[in-house]
Image (cartoon, rainbow, N blue to C red; front, side):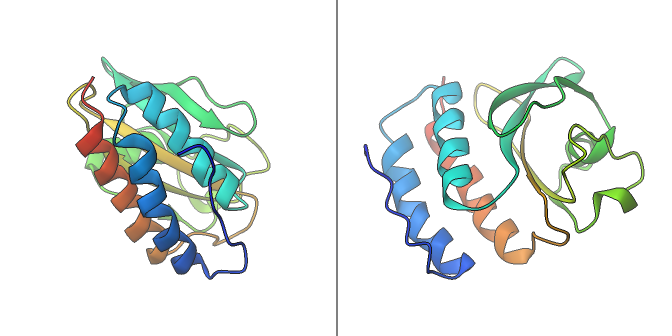
Length: 161
């Protein structure tokens, strides 16, 4: 796949449904985790009006910044700290409608108002956190969680090195 087809008039759910097969086509022939994470971050960033889309990779006892699209980001996050570290600790997705109301939120960008994180793993990384930030309050919901989890499942399937 060399061209991404995004109909911006679609609803959020319809857009995710349209993107899933395109993402699968993009990553199914590539085994490298970093390459696939980079392309997925670009696809989601290009498709939606989110502030930041990226991944944190577990390296030892901390998360280290991986491929992303958007403004500069925190480089390292400790286990249990902030939204990403908490998601890693409980191994559950977290939706934060207002980051200012999340205890121990790490403000990598003052522009971020809401956030969603999805933890997953691949054969190469025990834990990866898919992190998305928005400049809008309450921009993420169960629809995002459902489809971003499907994206993570695809990454788990195809990223084997």
